[in-house]
Amino acid sequence: MIDPIHSLAFSIHSNRGVYAILLGSGISRAAKIPTGWEITLDLIRKLAAIQDDTAEPDPSAWYKKEFGEDPDYSQLLENLAKTQAERQQLLRIYWEPNEQERGAGEKQPTAAHHAIAELVAQNFIKVIITTNFDRLMEKALRDVGIEPTVLSTPDHVQGALPLTHTKCCVIKLHGDYLDTRIRNTATELEAYSQEFDQLLDRIFDEFGIIVCGWSAMWDEALRNAIYRCKSRRFTTYWAVRSDPGDEARRLIEHRKAEVLKIEDADTFFGTVRQHVESIEEFSKPHPLSTEAAVMSLKRYLSESKYRIQYSDLVSETINRVIEIISGEDFALQGGPSPNSESITARVRGYDAACSTLLAMATVGSYWAKKDHFSVWRMALERLTEVNERPGYDTWIDLQRYPATLLLYALGLGALNNNKQIDFLGYLLATKVVRGGIMGIEKKIPVIEILHPILLGGQPMKYLEGMESRLMPLNDWLHNELKKYMKYLAVNDDRYTFMFDKLEVLMSLSYIFQKNQSKENGLGQWVPTGSFLYRHENRNRVMQDIQDSIRDFGEDSVFVKCGILGDTVGDCSQSIGFLAQFIKRNPRS
Image (cartoon, rainbow, N blue to C red; front, side, top):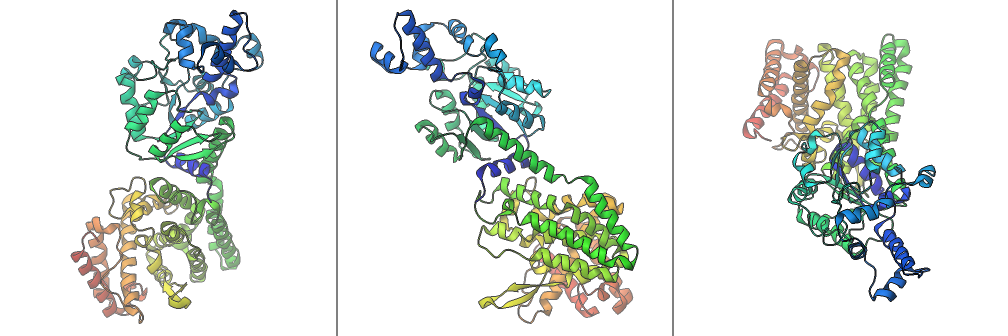
């Protein structure tokens, strides 16, 4: 089962700036800043002392015996200091270090504060909500060169920039300890100003939330703000050291939050930061490693004597990809179910894992010679092998996505060299073994299992930025593979045309191979692509194919490559079927 902290790290990484952190007093505990209850006990000791008594060994019991009720932080403060200004002065010593504490490094930012500040510096976090009066979070942010926008009063909120335009915003709901308007008592915590309420309504609606160090026990206004929000665009993660109290449990249920059992705030945020940075590092392979692999491939392409080295290089790269995508991060079950965050994170993980392979494939297919064809077919076959264990259907389907990436990269490289269309025909003729009815294995053309429309189904509409797209995964592929065209010096317009040409040929290949199948004929459906809404490119490709077949007959490259038929008649039939299908189903 995937550790929920791993899921959180993927969510933060794949949704930069989307997660806000809600911090309670527990975050500052390691800095030796007391919690509200610890302040209560200390004030009871002092109260007993001025009455010439001692509250030890149990200040709470002494208070109850003396006053006939359990001690309450808010009520005690209200009784000891009648105004906000008096309370501010009374409590100030609990947040400012004395000389001895300063020498011991106490009341300074903790490892948790520093980890959060590093996540802010890398643009993963930009909103921090806190019930604390101290300035430890601000100090940690300044230590990494960030001057945060601090909102601790209603007038601050009124004059603040929108959250999307700030590098980091620290929202101090209960005020700052140097401001006499700090909120301590139950009465003061019953309700926030309209400005704070509106700000919190936006945050809880638009952001994912990471809660740590907050018991939810005393802060009625904050609880109400969470209850007001009915939407759950992004997951709420609630970190706890022990079982949450009643108020926290109700909020967790309301937000459908993921509960994370942690050792302490320092370890938790340190681990989250480490995981996020690891994903970031993994997602950006060292450019020299990819460049070195491409240069080696080019060198091995130059002479036939290097065929073994060429094959070994491709095989070793495939091995590395398989090793990565077979890991825990790509498990088929356990962890969060497929949703907008997890699907985007997983697809990006596959993209990153395959990056060096895709650069090699683009160059390799452009220059491939006959004795290199089988190397790439073997690579395609190996990536098409899937884990047959049970799991979420979307995760099972997406196991084939790396093979789809490879097929597209090879196809784009081949089409950009006009002489390589026979290589594309060779690839599309590849068949892989799959279990059939009653466990009988059969060979299936790769186009029947690697077309993007056949991967993941409807959940692919949740890919980030693709929510309104007719062909979400096709469009994602178009955007992702564009970067590899730098190896072929292809401009954007030519790239898009070749992408559409490839998808048209893939559709035609599907039609031809289904018509050839004795077991299962074509039927009425054809997988299409982004060319559905790039009409000019589609029409041009279809016309080019028809003109070539008309002018050259059996000598046309489109007949010889075998993609859409073995004869002129076969090719014409495939083109006609696709044209009619598009006409009948313009939004297929």
